[in-house]
Length: 188
Image (cartoon, rainbow, N blue to C red; front, side, top):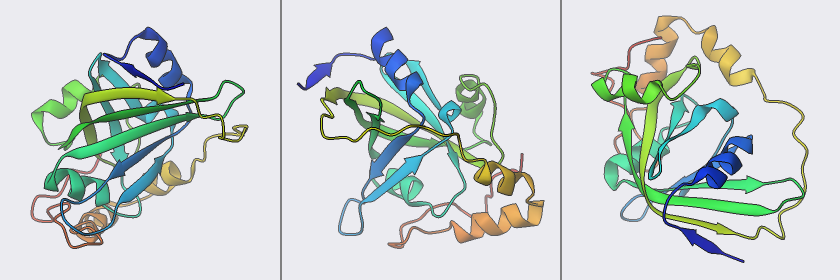
């Protein structure tokens, strides 16, 4: 049933590439709320090497993942197969926020075919545990298409709208530091 892997091998890379979405879970060090976020756009996740992954973090409803990573770095990423071949893959690790104005961002960005509008950071995760599970109780779903709404919204935002979003992302819902409005991310 469940198996642990020493690295992301070719078979796991293929499985990850086949998934249209993934989930990200983080939590603050003390108290607060556990955050679980669905992530779409299949081209926003990349395997950097056998023990490192990254995804493009787009502006959305909040800044929980960034705030939790700044607090303690703990993160779990989960992929689920909704096809006839049932499988759940969890990537446990320590994550860090790489902003577009950081030198490392261009090196990470090279692993992605395109940069979506509204990218606020890349989340880079150094993996500590890679494990799968059967997923036998996960229902079958068929992907109709990716939802273009977020890209469309961000593509229409003027620079002022972008800066307002940075200010709104100043703190997590539990009051942890998120984005620093005094050092806003540069617009694309």
